Length: 169
Image 1 (tube, rainbow, N blue to C red):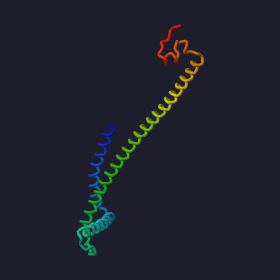
Image 2 (image 1 turned 90 degrees about the vertical axis):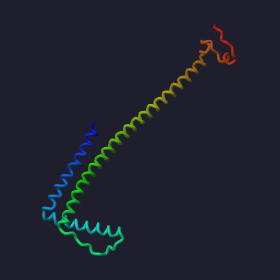
Image 3 (image 1 turned 135 degrees about the vertical axis):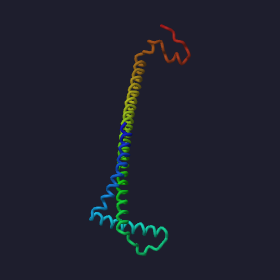
Image 4 (image 1 turned 45 degrees about the vertical axis):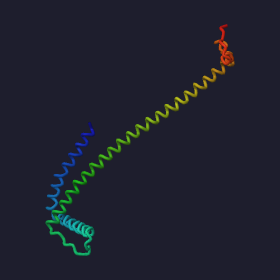
């Protein structure tokens, strides 16, 4: 019951993060200091991606890369910011799920270890009991030989070996 609700909650969190990311994108372009920061971030991202693309296609990389105009830079930055927010929420949900799963596996492993330990203890106990019973049987056999209890039952090892039938006394 808990697992489906947890998965449903994770899905709801991911779904709700998209409108929050959109709202974040809207508000990011309105504040002047933040706007300057994201414009510089977008320009740096533009330079890096353009350089990587030029290297990938085998073009010269020592050329000057024209900066984006301010509106395109703001739009690129807020898109990047919104996607980063949605991605970070997804990563947090995934790490939570992995952590929960590993805790569950650790509990299962601990239970298996305890069961194995109980089985070992039971095996040791049964082994000691078998040894105790063997020693008691040996003691009884020695007592029977020493006191002549074999004669009480009209049983003598020599008669059995020779194939004779014991006669009642």
